[in-house]
Amino acid sequence: MTEEETDEPTVPIVCEECGTTSRVSLSQLRTSLEKHNEHRHDGEEIAQVDPVIADELANAVADDLGLLDEE
Image 1: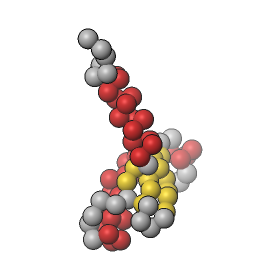
Image 2: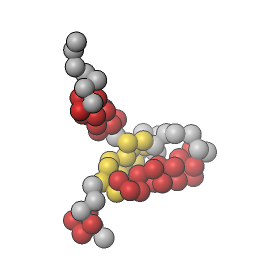
Image 3: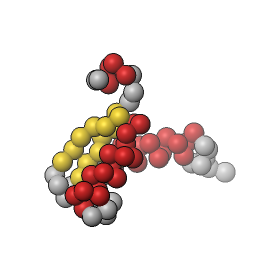
């Protein structure tokens, strides 16, 4: 199934050590990262959500929660 068929968002993941990038469905993100890191990097957390996307998401969540509001 493609993203259009499921309407589920995909998340970019990168592994700089392997030189790979891919997109996985949000529901499979944790499993995909754990599987890659277990098989390729002896469980070390090397592959990760694209850092640019992770930073943008963290900023959006912090803004929604009011954590960035100045007092």
